[in-house]
Length: 297
Image (cartoon, rainbow, N blue to C red; front, top):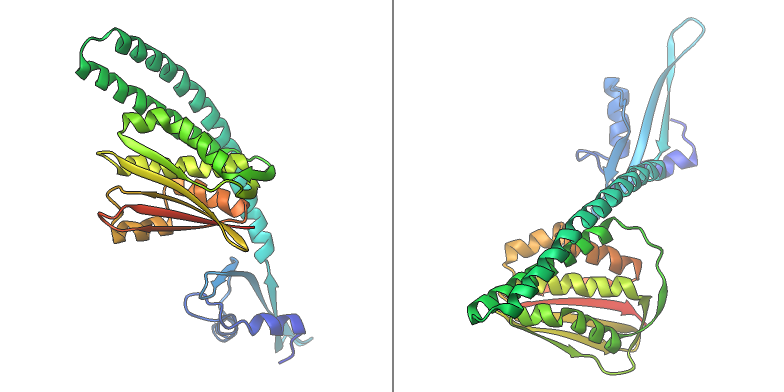
């Protein structure tokens, strides 16, 4: 058996498996059973890292047409496959972005009319019950607007513009944005960020992360409560934390969220990764939820 160094390196990667078999085992099976792999094979290791290969097997015949050997080729096409998949994903994002923009335009226009109309009704209403109903409607309209913005943000590809962000000022901006929504939902939104904590990141992205997390908290707090945004600076990192005293998330739902999240958590993960941040969620039924973000300093 003669093989070059590249083939030896690939065959030595026994941690990568396809249907429980290593690459060397697959090659032996192909030679023994004359099995042909027409399509590329994707092998995965224990950490779900991938190795995409194409196997080629050719029988070698002498001048009398008698077999005298076999030539096997192993092509590592992992990078090529990743680029092909990225191209498909980019094409989908372009289409989804156009669709999201059209939907946002069609949804926001009637929502603006509804909001103004309800505000007019609220001003002329003499019934406390009717005024509270109007406030609830306005709060829900604002929430739909934020969901539409989330949809647009998910499909929008924008170059990051990293700057030094004053976290206390950012928290103040978010609090102002949510003041009416929180009031209508009987929620107190608090900020606990010492002055002078500076975070090097894309401000729009971090703001969107906070918006998504606050949206999730508001949804979980059916009867009101408290949301607290905290920030702390350590020697080598900056910690941001958003906690609520809502109903919490059961363990089985926490597992599902950690696997695939919802649209809001998907955006959170994407934006934090682009800003070199990490994300961790802690929750338990009846004990609220805590979202913790860590950034390098």
